[in-house]
Image 1: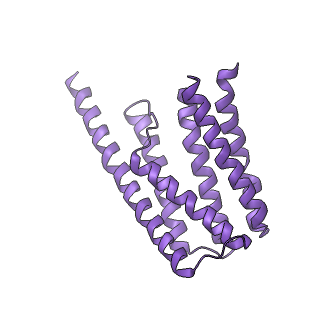
Image 2: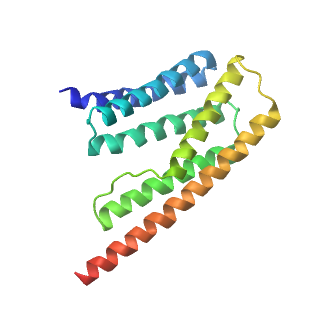
Image 3: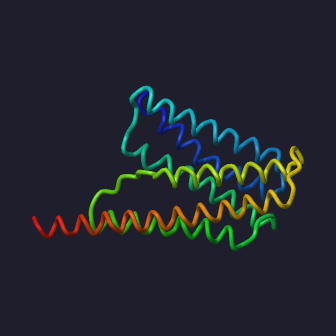
Length: 187
């Protein structure tokens, strides 16, 4: 029964999307920062339990990145809706995720089972996006004064790694799909 604990924690993290969006929309940035911190801690906890207790599963491998993407996408969209982020940055982040989801879905239906394998670049992108959201929430809550040049620089860094990661996924998974199709033709 305990082997399902990481998946339960991941499911609870997905439920944090609603209060995070609501708190940002209500401009209650202190509370939104707390929800984001709880989500981050739960992500670390479920990952630790899954790896160190041997409780990894296919569904957990799929749900964990989905939870991360839902939270980050919701945070970026909410921050844009309250006028704190530029549309081009949010569009790039959401666009990348849509391309990845569309590609994974197509791979699943055309090639076969899709196993979520985040690349190093994808993990870096997630880390930079998390840092960006946390820094924005810290700034908006008044807990940390962040210079506009730092915020702008981090926005550009976030955009760059997001774009690079999206392109990387297209190239790598496109090559995998072509290899799988060639192997299928040979068989």
